[in-house]
Image 1 (tube, helix red, strand yellow):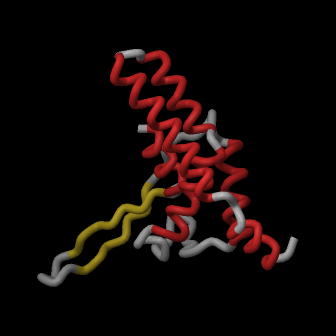
Image 2: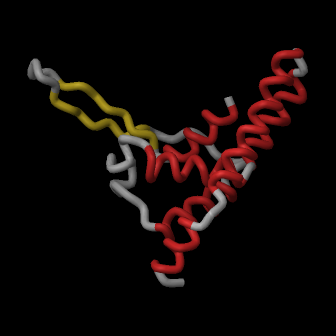
Length: 135
C-alpha cells in the first residue's frame, strides 16, 4: 500500500462512532461498579482492552492530539506515519492478552533554576492510554 492510501484510510475512519462505542462501554463499566458487580466490571474492562475503538482512539490520542506527540519513546521514534499507526494497532491487538509493562525512557530536562527534571516516557504510550480508558 502507498502512504497516500494509508493516510486516506486513517483520516476516513469513523472517529465519532469509535468515541460513541468507547463511551457506551465506559458507561456500562461505571454502572457495574456503582452497583457493586465486580465480575461484570472486570469483564467490561477486558472488553475495553480488546476493543478496536479504544485501540484506535488511543493511537490517535498519542500520535495526533497529545502535546507530547513529538516526544520520542524508548525506540527513539518521535512520530509515526499512517502505515506505522495501523501496524501499531495490529501489534496492540496481538498483545492484548500477553502485554507486560516495560521499562521507561528517562530524559533529563533542564529547569529554569539550573536543576534537571526527569521525564519518564513509557515504551507503549498507546497501551497506557487504552488502560486509562478501561479504568
